[in-house]
Structures are given as structure tokens and as C-alpha cells.
Amino acid sequence: MVLASQLRGGMAIVFENQHYRVLTADYHPGQGQMGGATHARLQNIDTGTSREHSFRAELRLQELAVEKQALEFLYMDEEQCCFMNPVNFEQIEVPRALVGPAAVFLESGAKLTIEFVNGRPIHALFPEVMEAKVVDTAPAAHQQADTGFKGAKLANGIEIMVPQFIKTGDMIRVDWANMRYVDRAKTKSV
Image (cartoon, rainbow, N blue to C red; front, side, top):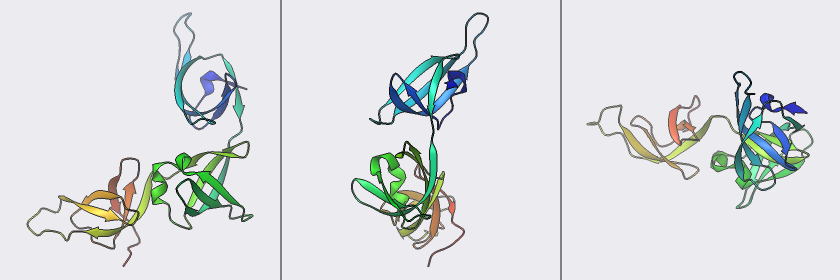
């Protein structure tokens, strides 16, 4: 059991006989005789729907154990992403919708942490920045300042804006949540 005032993002709980993943939780202490409250954004593990709820701080909730496994990405199709446990070589299918929009950045052999509740995948943890190869971009125009941006197509099909000095074949780092160029990757592809 956990107090509602102790909720934090990444936890899994049982509330109203439903299993939820806590996306965010903000505790607001009360004043005087007013008790504190925790405002939480929850995602239903079974349906994927989200909701917001304010819990009294002293409310006790059943916490579900969240197991994290570092898995190796193998391939994906329209519905599933297939991962392999590098320890026992077991293959695990994770719904592509659960992996989310960052799935387009996954390449064979990439390592990713998947969260499980009762043996069922509930969330994929991506780094904030992913690497991708530029497969097509215009050469830099000499008249333009180096601070200008131009369009670039990445190996995964995504198109983003990159600085003028980026060339076709460069590996770049992308903030996948905002689809923005961050910097050039340390390793450069030819």
C-alpha cells in the first residue's frame, strides 16, 4: 500500500478496481484544517485511456510492482514491435501503440527498457534524444548564413529541419518528442 501523497510518475496502482500507470503526480499540501491532495494523471493499463484525478493525501492505494527489462529491438510490423531478452533469448512482442511515435527511430539491435506489470508490457522508456541518419538534404547555399535551417529526410522517413552544415550521410541526434535537431552525433556515417 502507498499513500496518495507518495505517488510519482512511473508507478502502477490499483484504483476503483482498475490498473493504472501514474503518468504525473503533483502533491499539494493543505493549509490549516484542509488536508493535502495529490493531483495525478493516470493511464489505464488495459484500455490505454488517460484520466486525471485528485486524491486525498491520506488515501491508501495498492501499488503494483513495475519490473523493468532491458531488451534488444529486432523488428516491427504494423501492429507489433518484437524485442529479444539478451539473457534468455526469449522474444517479446510489444504493441506498437504502446511503444508510441518514437518507434520509427528503432533500429535492429537497439537497446530499450520496457516496463512490465504482472508480466505484461505497459510502457517503453526511450532516451530523450535518438540518433538517425540523414539520407537526403540540400547542399548548403553559400549565400545563406550558417545559422539558417534546411529540410532533411532521415533514414526512418521523418523530415525535420537541420542546420546548413549537415550533409547527406551525417548521423544526427534528434529530440524525438518535438522532432527537432539537437546536434551532430559523435560517430559519423559515410
